[in-house]
Length: 111
Length: 111
Image (tube, one colour):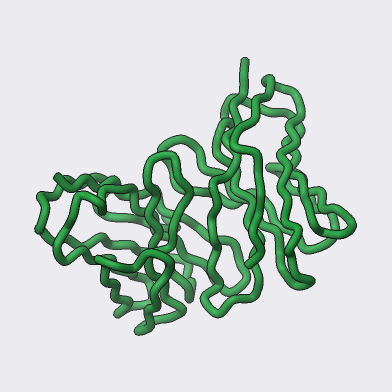
């Protein structure tokens, strides 16, 4: 019963570097989401996917790209990291009208 | 989705009941009320949700006002492990099945 697994758990990047965060779920959920959470704030939606091969923008999509080539995986990419992208990133998955299951988060620091 | 208003923080004594309020005066007839909580350094986890009637589960109870403009999450006996940020979210049938998080209520539990 792994649920939602995020990789890596921690990462430090230099400004301008790129990286990909991986989210994997084993619940056969159609919907997947990427959120970011800044200190003392609630979660803000970056991008989401309603099924394999589909992606859509959320509230704060700038500076990020996503891909959902397989139903169980949702990748979040940063092409050129900026200090403003220092945050904790959470992935979640759900079926239609069902509860969300969240991963444990990736703590990213951009220096 | 309707906007929600929650107190920024609340305090409770261990083993006493806790009532966490949420106002959602612009809720629509088909919107569900969801509660999630986020323990320190973890991703959010589902607590409970409801539409019109009061709901109970192992974690908590949800009391929904008759006019549905407010709701209360009830923890029957707070434990130290219940110290978390509690998010009240009103969710309609949007195409992305998205949850929009506000600031939530930080619950502190005193031994």
